[in-house]
Every structure is written in structure tokens, then in C-alpha cells.
Amino acid sequence: MTHNKKNRRAILILIFFTFLTTTWAQTGPSQSASNGSSDNSATLTRGVQVIKNTDTEFIKNSIKNSTLIGPMPSNVFLSVTLLLQVKNQKSMTETETSINNPNDPAYHKYLKPGEVADNFGPTMEDYQKAIDFIQKNKILIKKKTGDRQMLRMMSSVGTFEKVFHVNINLYKLVDGRICYAPDQAPSIELDIKIASVSGLDNLSRLGTEGTHFIRSIP
Image (cartoon, rainbow, N blue to C red):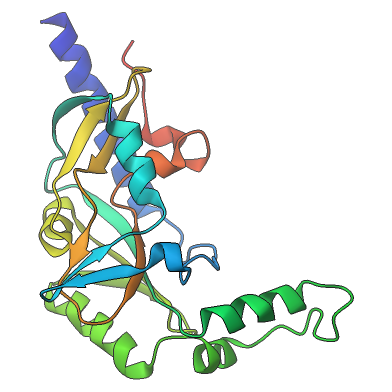
């Protein structure tokens, strides 16, 4: 009985801090160049796209030896970021290298968001498709970017589970900490390539900004 009370208390703490973080989350995430690499490519199967981002194996390995506590409450709100696949990835990588190379004539000649969008970003049509899809599923869009690569959104666990075809569960890790994570790689019924989705778990934030999501069972 005491053990069950401790589990419930840890879960309540997790939900509370998740609510605080998603409510007070910054309106824009740090920019990353990883949203177009070949390792993050999406797989299209019968209209359902499996999103194989870099966190997929990390999440799988992290919860492999953990204890399943149960489903995450469906009414908890999460802040989730969707990254669309860039075009001309090789050229984009070369441009980034040149901008950061002191010996290159292009050193520190940064591109404007519009220039990034025109040269490397998804088309306006594809970006709008993603926006329409999100709004159709009654998900709140919190931020768009001028390079058309990112959409930050907020909705309930239950909504994201339906959209990404996952079950988001609570797990007790081998070190006693409580986390939440999807039970499989997310997928989405969208005919444009998605590079990654983040925010469906808090495992990637362990040890850094996200430690306040996790509390050990005393």
C-alpha cells in the first residue's frame, strides 16, 4: 500500500511540473540543423508516415528495462515541436560549414529566414499542408518560423496519441525516476516528409533543463 502511495505521489508531481513547463514554455525552440539528415528520414507506407528521428532508438533503449506504471493521463497538455524535412541537405550543410569557417569568404554571412526558406526549406504549399493538418486536428499552433521548417504546437496527451498513433505511458526507470514516453515510433497521416517530432517524451531532457519533470520515488 505504501509503495502504491509513493508511485501515485511521484506521478502527481510529474503531471504538475509537466503542466507548469508547458504553460511557461518559451514560444520558440533553439534552432537545430539536424532536421534534414538522412538518419531522420521518414518512411511512407500506405499514407502513414513513420517518423524515424534520432530520439527513436534512445527512447526505446531507455525504457527497455523500465517498469510500466500505466498510461499518461490523457488531459495533460504537452508542447510538441514538428520539424519538416529540408531540401538540398548537402548544400545546406556546406553553407553552414562555410558560414562558420573563418577562412571562408562566406564567414559570418548569415542568411535571412526567407533566404533559408527559399534555398533549403519546404515549399509554402507543404508548410501550409502541415498547418492545415494540425489545425484540422484541433491542435493549437504556438509558433511558426520564417524558414518554414518548424511548427510548435500544444494540445492534450490524448490528442497527440491519436495524431501520432502512439500510447504515451509513464515508466519507472531502473534508477527510480519517473518519466513519460511513447510506446513506439510516432507516425502521421501526412503526405509531406517530416524530419522529427519532439515533446512526446521527457527522456531527452534528463540531466539538463528537464530534470524538474522527473522525481525519484523516495
